[in-house]
Image 1 (cartoon, protein in one colour):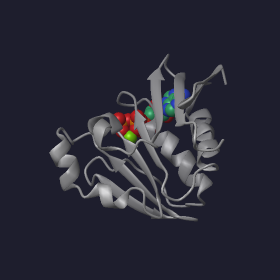
Image 2 (cartoon, helix red, strand yellow):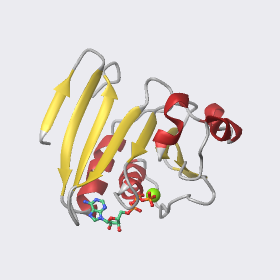
Image 3 (spheres, protein in one colour):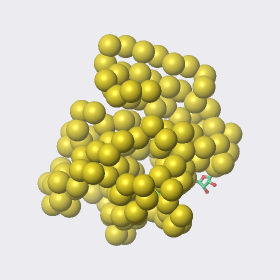
Length: 154
Ligand SMILES: Nc1ncnc2c1ncn2[C@@H]1O[C@H](COP(=O)(O)OP(=O)(O)OP(=O)(O)O)[C@@H](O)[C@H]1O
Ligand SMILES: [Mg+2]
């Protein structure tokens, strides 16, 4: 971890990843802290590693299946210790389209939701959403910023 910033409302961790394996591990560590109903919004450019990060979270939930980007299906569901909903909003361009997806009833239920391109639905996600932003620093290095509302533990 390169920095930890805490304010009354958010705790932000900035971490450097030096390869896909690192990003997966960072995802696994976050996954170990998640509880049913948690929502994780991922943003970052194409190929930054959002799906790689989701693989790590899935591993923490005991999911054996290989996670692939639901770019065309928009939503995939996996069964682990608890359900994991993996969404990709790349093809969503308006808040209305997001509402049509019917995601709002799904998120916050008894599963964990991970949402790639979450900025497409920024205003429709719950306030307690954990935000993960991945920036490409170099070929294999990424700056990963995890921002958690302070009332969520750890
Ligand atoms: N440090 C790193 N972390 C994550 N991925 C990395 C890293 N270095 C290189 N990569 C490579 O970058 C690619 C990331 O692909 P991934 O599908 O996870 O991106 P994405 O952000 O989900 O893209 P998309 O927006 O298309 O869904 C993989 O090929 C991975 O091997
Ligand atoms: Mg992806």
